Image (tube, rainbow, N blue to C red; front, top):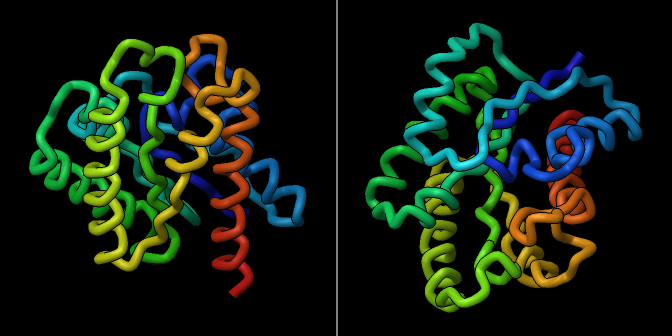
Length: 200
């Protein structure tokens, strides 16, 4: 049976949506629907986490097992707290190396997911949306560079959040986090990669 570890923050646990609506659980459901046997996802994520907080929690969990594939989505809270790109680069690189070890060293079984743009949502009303977008782009350029340099997969979902971030159907009740409908878009992209890898 295949296994899945999801590392991240509020966008991974699915803040404000039912458990089965977050993207890791939707990935598992969609994989099962196409005949891939997979266990429930193991999720290490919490709303508000930055890269260093995720690193600390992973160490505290002290997981001994490895997984068929791993997703990593982290950085929005670094941006929100005005952390430097240099700090993010260093800690994200550490996280990617940890993800790789959890994926049994199989580079193509690690999937980095881009950071959503929360600046377009109702929550960000009155803030400098252009500045937020610019900073999110800088973070995504960094995580994409690191992921591709390591030959991992990189899934771009930021543009989807910019397109759908003002639509109530694609937002949770807090007007900030995505709804299950938005997460389904992300899950489809991840499932496509996982299916291709597992069918090799």
